[in-house]
Image (cartoon, rainbow, N blue to C red; front, side, top):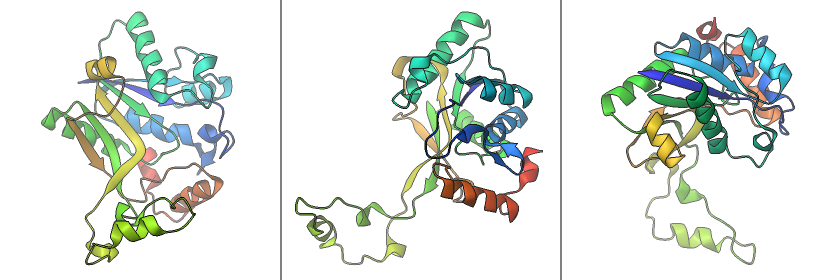
Length: 239
């Protein structure tokens, strides 16, 4: 299989300013994704979609290509990720003679997917023949215990949701999962036709809680740093 990895790395970030090049253990977040993709076993090209010159230079340093600058209308907060991916694929189809079997979107804010994770994920895709694969983590809280406040600001919605559940112990509720942002993979033609990584014929790649951390706030960033400093995350995977 031949894979196009697209690293999403625009310059604007409000929760953690300049997040994509903010460093953990001396290495910018965007580098974690580039190195993991580079070390994976698949036949690949790794490109970065950014409008930011400084981010582009950092990405080049770690072995990715920055063959174009992201248009300004796709570099604002309201721009959709699927539109950014479609833009990158269209550019590749016009400027690259190679044909790709899969598109893989990578977000630096979820840095700790290693090359082993990518290898395992693509093995799952190859064996299952699924259209898409999404990295997932088990949720901390079951949706049984999640609801909105009622129109008076009260908890009646919670009451009606759980009143017929005989045992509300968290431990016996069925496991539920959510996307962790580490990788989004689709067959090239599936994405071109549907403009989404979601599919009826989709597979999960389930990761542990630590590797699934998403850095959206400064608290997340400090926790991620602690994971590395305390050797909870094996930094050797990126060397």
